[in-house]
Amino acid sequence: MVRDTQTIIERIRELVGPILSSMGLELVDLELSGQGRRGHLRIFIDKDGGVNVDDCEQASRYVGHALDAVDPIPNAYLLEVSSPGLDRPLRKAEDYRRFAGKLARLKLVRPLDGAWVVVGRLRGLEGDRVELQPEDREAVQIALADIAQARLEVEW
Image (cartoon, one colour):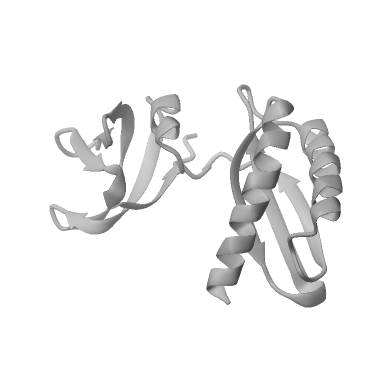
């Protein structure tokens, strides 16, 4: 079941990525959950300066038509298109460059000096290693392969 869901997600990603790109939007992430009438497809989009309601509405319309034509999801679902939020996930190598200077939380595959979670200011990407400046210690470099999950932290 999980494998089938991953296959469907990849198919949707391949379908909607170019559509969103042609609209000047970035596909940040997508989630597929539930089954039957309770299915839910969430697509998170962004662009420089952030997205607004009109961007989400237009993306929903175009993506919805494309999904209806190809029908990659075998059951009924609700489509939701939204911004990734202030605590957006960092998925691609480019995200670490783009958000240099921002505060981020990285959950690791293996602990770094005993810590499974490291919070600090992104300094960018050097090769395949994320540079991060925690508040309480020297800057660290963490291999992309050692990051299980990463998100921006909301700063007030």
